[in-house]
Image (cartoon, rainbow, N blue to C red; front, side):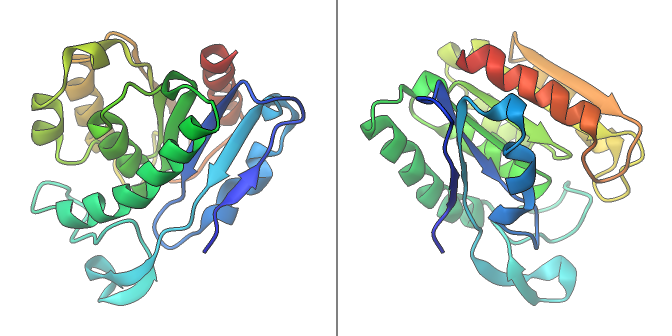
Length: 215
């Protein structure tokens, strides 16, 4: 399925590739990213493929990778993450071929899409503009952070999470940020009085993050 592209009113200052959560699709954030504060940025909203998901009794839905449980401490579907990363990397390479420097491309996502944004951003061979992870977690945390290259240490990271998230508990996000903050100089973590969702204040803070990096 072709990704949704929201083009900027003017020539774009940069690109954000944003990945939806489990069971959703690229339309999930379309209305948010058409708000005026985002109108200088090109957004690319891809759709995950359909696949059986273990945590949902094998029911087939859009997913970037299989999910076994919500503890995120047991085996993780690294093969599935790698498979999805191939198509997202192609989107990044397409933007670079259009003349957008890799440093002006941000990868972000919500929930499972946030985890994928970490996987992509920390493994991509070129330094990207930043990572924005909403209501997510750092997957394969020891493996990803142990293989980091030195130049990635200055890549900006925006993490945001609901204090009352009952899907990915705030403690899991805290643990992820603790791991990231040891490796990155520009990692921030904002918390909001909400569940597994987004709120207006979070979207405003996200727009500031995007515009500061891409303008």
